[in-house]
Image 1: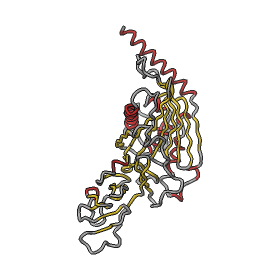
Image 2: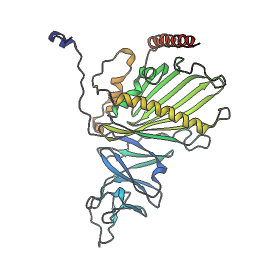
Image 3: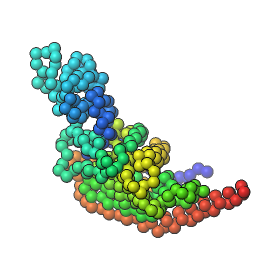
Image 4: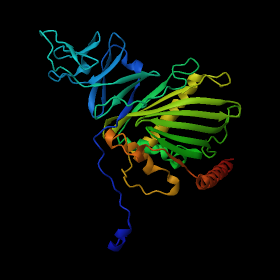
Length: 385
């Protein structure tokens, strides 16, 4: 049946502008720092360009534009010599400060021999770069906090994963306010959900329980039974989240830290990374390193569930929302501060905002759905007997 012309005014049209070519101001994680400390140049495509990352004899990791300002040679195909990266084309030597330090066949280095460089931060075994379209350094107070347990003998080492997602970074930011998708996409049962945005930090508070209808019908009686999941997940700037996770079982609590980070390749794709560490405790059953590895696989599976949605959905600038959908417009307003000039950041982007979702209706509905699914599964099992 076709839609008659008189009904057209009643239809809500999707508004979707072009993704912006400007990249967010802030600290961006490029992964585990040891990866870049092998004395070789590394290529990273980020912020719409190609970068070269290398560490010199002093051990410091440097990030430069990948193309030599002489005649365009690709420095990522060059060689690390001392504290410089040598171009494979004519051996021009570039330092981590972006200055050409030597031209072996020339009497002197040209006065204007400088290239683009990125400020770096090595912390908790991770490498960060500061990106600012205006070229300013990080403001005082805009920092990545130290991570509890990172590089601590009482915790496991990082279990790190990376994958490329072909969509805008805004899609991943919407997740921080999206309670309902946990039930439908990740088979988790949310019972408490709150957001707090202030300054450059956006936090999600989450409690959840296991869904009885998706757990094994005949679980191992010796396996510990999880009673509750609690999460405090904060984005520090536009792309780096630290999630303090607690898994409460009958006789112990497992403390875990999840890193959810990304950096843009271009305006329509980004690298999504996750890192997992688990606290080693005497009462923790099994090998903590194996537990961390299993947790990482589970998290990656969750990311892949999100990615499938993101890469097939439409971009919607005017989402049609119900009360239980949360602070979608508010998180986008908070996120906007990283894409405008510092002078254009408005109070409404950074002022404290709190929103706790009323979970009464969703919990009531989900309990019925879970009960129905369990009943159907039980009936099917009885027919097989």
